Image (cartoon, rainbow, N blue to C red; front, side):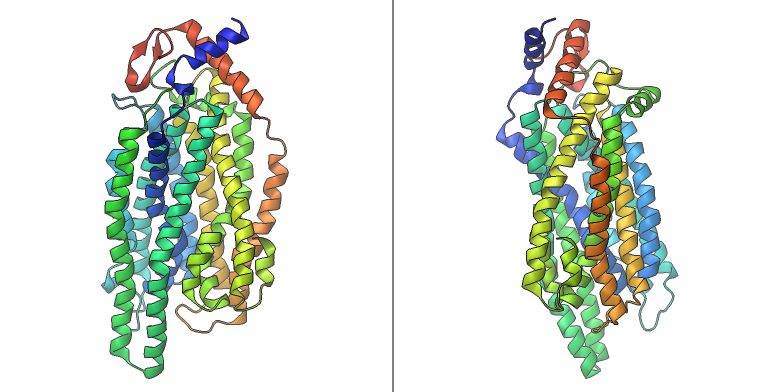
Length: 470
């Protein structure tokens, strides 16, 4: 078959058509919904556990490492479940809609350690609170995998067009960023206000007022997570109704052996994952440290909101105490770079799906995305643990108005030194990445030509078609 006929065979079905604005916007809302749970935990969970629930930073650092390692393996389970599924709604959307509410409810439970378990002046045993944290955070991670893996895999099934896929990935990043900024501006000013009142109550020795204010701190997280249940589910409904699969495939489901073979031969995916392992470890060390940097380096936890908005490199480590404007400039520089890299990474992950099908003849969107997400979860585990361990190493004192110099150095290291070092490692690894746009188009067209010659393909919803879809 000639190159021209190959191209026309791929263009004959919806996987290369221009997507509607509604579909692209709805896909963006999916990441907004996911990040109502994920970004909330990434930015505020360490702070919640140490300053609201009273658990030590060292214990939480270890918990982050262990639970997020567990989460990484749940990604593989979710990816395999997706590849083994086909329904009248397709492979991906049923998972998104059926697990959305459980995910958002677990976010509420995670940020709602019962008062009787919290570590306070009268209860110094952190064991029960820590056990509760382990259980709820593990369940949150499992449910997040069951929603986010199908959601992330869906993009590769919606389009095979380089330009259209770029739109999906770019708008997805907007959804993720919008969620982070939205929830931080929603929470940070309220927490700052309560903390100022707590400081005044401590100076006045008003224990009754102090207890009431600690309850107010919990109320902030309770109200936020309950509100997110409604808002998040509405976002996932938009994904379900407006983001349809278009790519035809040779078979509806794949075996475990086919999945393993596809991933084993996927060199671009391997390089992408290793590079991401370095780079994202630094990224995920920043999130948990942000609230501490805002309060103790810049002087007010409310600075967490503009930090999240602009979210720079190693210069942050040397920024003077209280130099908020200078810190925001450095963060803005890093934020632009990080946004570009994140968009590129998700776009490259989708490219590796096409490479895997070209190499092995089997399309495994779920497992391919799960492997990439597995890597990202490892980095979340390492990044979150590093932040907690650095606080412990620096002798951080939970809730204290003044921290020792060692704690301030640890906070600076988590938000600046760690990301700078691992970013250099990531660049060295990624130098060998083999795919570009021209190579991608060639392998996509060759794959679609093979499908057209074979016939009896599986369309969206599991229907058998004799030729590429109109």
